[in-house]
Length: 186
Image 1 (cartoon, rainbow, N blue to C red):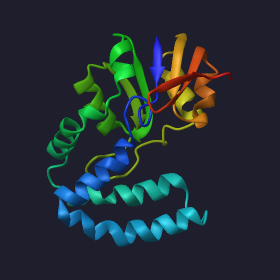
Image 2 (image 1 turned 60 degrees about the horizontal axis):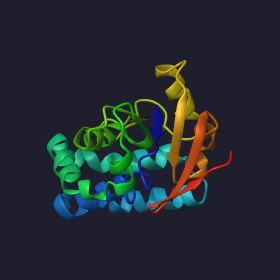
Image 3 (image 1 turned 90 degrees about the vertical axis):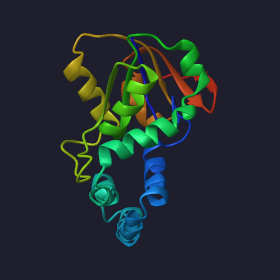
Image 4 (image 1 turned 90 degrees about the horizontal axis):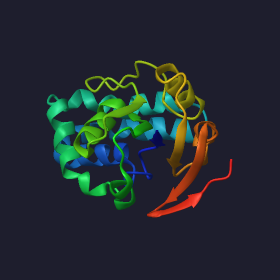
């Protein structure tokens, strides 16, 4: 099995940040969330707020989008051109995507891309609240082993060294920078 991070790996850019910007443009009521996001962003930068708490405050804007399911589908449909060609060329039926982005968002993208298996951060799309831990770093390994206790990873792809714990499980690991792949010695 090949395992991939999503943002800046398969997907060109950060899909969550893109969703937020798309909401500001297409659901203007969400602009009312900017002061809250800015205040929490400052607290996060000053290390007075945890990352997951900051993200929940950012995602609070979801309560202002009454048609959230349709909105996510609209966004993902309009951004499928962000899926990188290197992935399309090497895609396999048993690929797995593991991401820190909200699971409802990653699931929508993966369905459209023909990727049958994914796991990501459990965020309620109606409230923006986490229903578990942010799927990042060691949490990716825990989640992977919970579902695939004996599986081996042939190749792992990520843009970030924060994924080193998962890269260590793979026979081969690659850092993705733009459209280039570089062997990752872990």
